Length: 200
Image 1: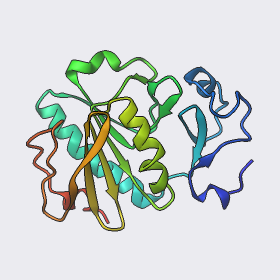
Image 2: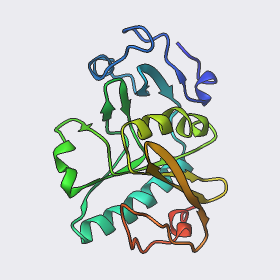
Image 3: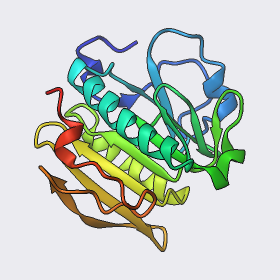
């Protein structure tokens, strides 16, 4: 079992009873006894993440609220936030901070999880999760064909917008301040980047 100090970053949860690392699937993940910790499976490897801090949760709340209001007002689909399991594919079960499912993909919403790729994923890349969010999870989102991925940096108060092209993400740029994000999944989203950080 990892100590509190070791859990300051995302790490493989090698001590959890289950299949060999690299062979975890949703059924194995769902069988883990509830222990208050946040687990994900990426490429069959079970990972454990540190609990988010207050700043992280403030930003998640702001982004969720703005996206939910816009999506709801346009009857575009639904917006969710962690903790909620997303089974991207076999061997990839994640809990994005915030994500959007457009109404044409509502069949991906099941009773206890999302099965398939969200249309837009937002991850708050704190110091403890940035490496994982921008490498292992980025690859998992690309492989599952998530069309748009935002990486939010609380320290610089910026949002990097990535669009999927031929199963590889291309950056549209990193945006801050009064910039409006050039979202293709949610065009005309009337929110400036600085509004996501209003509570900081």
